[in-house]
Image 1 (cartoon, rainbow, N blue to C red):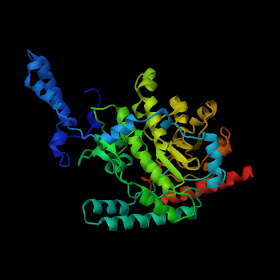
Image 2: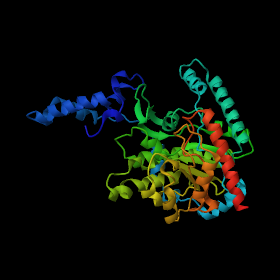
Image 3: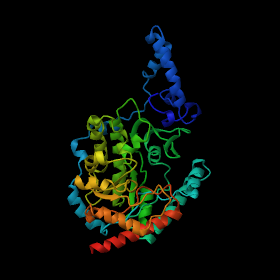
Image 4: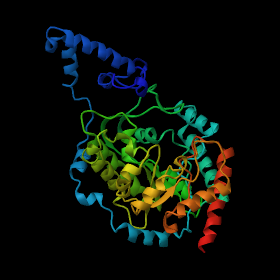
Amino acid sequence: TSCSLLHVPYTLKSESLINEDAKSLMAFAEEKLQELSELKSIVNSANPLKNPLYKNNCHLFDKDLHPKKENVRKRVTALTENDFVRLPKRETRAQLQAQALNLPLLPTTTIGSFPQTADVKQNRALFRKKIKSESEYIAFNKQKIARCIEKQEELGLDVLVHGEYERNDMAEYFGENLHGFIFTSKGWVQSYGTRCVKPPVVFGDIERTKPITVDYAVFAQSCTSKPVKGMLTGPVTILNWSFPREDVSLKESAMQLALAIRDEVLDLEAHGIRIIQIDEAALKEKLPLRKADWHTEYLSWAINAFRLVHSGVKPETQIHTHMCYSEFIPIIKDIDNMDADVISFEASRSSLHILDALKSFNFRTAVGPGVYDIHSPRIPSEEEIVKALKLILSKLSVSKVWVNPDCGLKTRGEEETIPSLKNLVEAAKKVREDYK
């Protein structure tokens, strides 16, 4: 094989959630090895085109097994250049958002998730096993959300999050709530370190048929007068962290996903959510190996997919995004061209190396370079965060800087999360004093 089979699930034999038609078009690690054996047999035969193994494989492609939705395809076909442009321009939006949100200099926030404690995981497991009813499951999550909002207010954070207690994985959660995905029961693959995920499989045309995050976001906002971010995964990240279809292009799937997430964005806005974060953690993961192909084969549609998601919101609605796991300096201009209002970067583990690039490229988007590493249980001191902020402000304008951790706090414990965020808030307050 061309790369390690570590990156695909082990075998289809154990799968009970996938029907036989879908299975016939798929190959996990064990099946790929069988395919290698079959390929050897075919190419070594006297007449490969008449080999039964080859004919059987050809028959797979005679079938049209992928569910199609004509209304979805018509929406994609009807897109025009105007659908990828948000008006007014970013500078005008920034002024309107400043008036509407009335945030302090160096606003503090988190990336989205809060610790997924044992009781959160147990609640999800009991619901999946149908031991808990849906109403009991939702009631538990709302109790956790209310407490999460209370903790953030006690800490003094400026822009709050609901904690994402209902979510298992960034891509899987949205795949479960969109038409067009199928799921494995045991299709685990390694994500990073010892963490594994079960990626969704794009199998049909993608459509949002109901609100996904609106109820929890509206409930969280009802618990506080401070703005609560609506939290979404972006279309490119959902696609890059799923197994894609092969009968349509990645661009087609990305645009279908973008329209689905766009519907969710507009629904959140209509329900009073004033800040919406659309995470594109995996934007860089499908860059072609040849740099000459970056824009012609990928970034041209990947950036447009993100722009399509948010181009329809009001100027006063603030759009955030977040990126992690990658080195972004080579595509920094493209990231700025996503036309978000605020972007947070995983930056502390690289000693804020990205700052020089942001400065030299005159990066226009407001930024939140992570001021401490959430992949470590170590609690950063207030002085350490003050030092990081002063370094950031030596390169960037204070009016465009947000204060946040590197990434979401899902994998951390509360015993390190709360004191870390307390130090973050106090550090921001201390540095603000220098600008009064």
